[in-house]
Image (cartoon, rainbow, N blue to C red; front, side, top):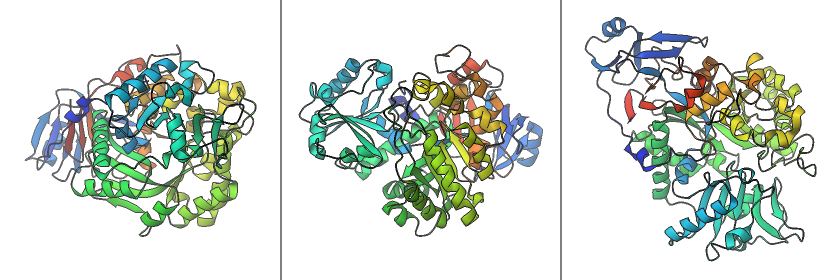
Length: 551
């Protein structure tokens, strides 16, 4: 799937200051109450600080703010700003400056895209790209360095797989990184090799760092430029808050600077990437629960248990059904994983751990079962990010331990072409199991994992309700018994995503005292056919009472 949201048109997004008091009139408004029930309204009033004063009829809001400026939205549908509970903000902006490999339907097409980009960017020291997927190409194998060498030999090429858990490089990149047949596989990673042991050009999970560490870091100006592109992208699709799943000191500095100067047009709830040096620096003063009127927060830590299903890096309890020689990769032994979690929990941070395979999920649930009683901090609302393939007997443990399953609906519809091949008919019953989680009372925090998937939350709503991809395939939905209702999916991208960041009292719904984060869209999503959800267009995005996007 090509992320068509990354175009020059994104840069047309703009912000205008709110008036002293503002009332939105003639709205077809929907929000949620604390019980998750839909509430209707026609008018929304907020003050000069961007706080909601009243929600209801036009008479009620006019009485609450008698001197407000009125904006007529002419019957258009108005919704709370949507929240993506798992994305990678800077990486979203970086895609715009690299080789786009989501679109090519074949290996040859991908290689041509690399060649075209290299010719068009002769001064780039590295050729960087994103989005390749050998499953779509029907190769039955990973691509190789030799296939890239045909078009680019003199400069290193580094291409990120669609799931972000493998890279495809040319021989020059391997040489610059010093990766040879003698290089051992790092813990939690794999160097793909030919029968003689020679690296073939694909590195999975922890092995990616062997090459990543020699790639020059972006300059401060480049980092800010990528953030600008990302923020424009997010505003265009109606995201007023995102959870950034893994940042470093340099990104925290930029976020705070943007927050200080009113340049964050989407709220950011950030997670510190790992418990290493960046955590030591960023955690000196403890969790940052709110900064600059709830525009920024840094109160969580992001860890990794395993890899991804598509690259067979996800850790499974039994071998892969389509490759019995491997069970995937746990990144850390149990004791080391618990030590990382312990360090973050002891410091008072919410711990959010990537776990895709059933073995990865099992390892993390076992660790939570030991650590949460020790610290008595279930109120921190610890999370498992993805919770993608879970042993059925482990699913109830999420509820028992108070663990939030942070899940991405479009992963199911993107993975349907290979997931059951990977895990087989029985294990798939515990995969992408939204209905099972909801029925046991778990609150799901929905996201997209952008830029691995499109950040467009309406595509996520569509996938959650239909279990179909953007082309409405397969007919009837893929394992439709695990689908959400539209109200459940709406809550998953609003109030429950806010709850997963401890922000349900300030955002996630349109209620008195909360921030005026809302969007105006071109159709009534509660009256159209589910197949049309993904086609919804955002007309306006408002964050904290300021309009940050207008179509």
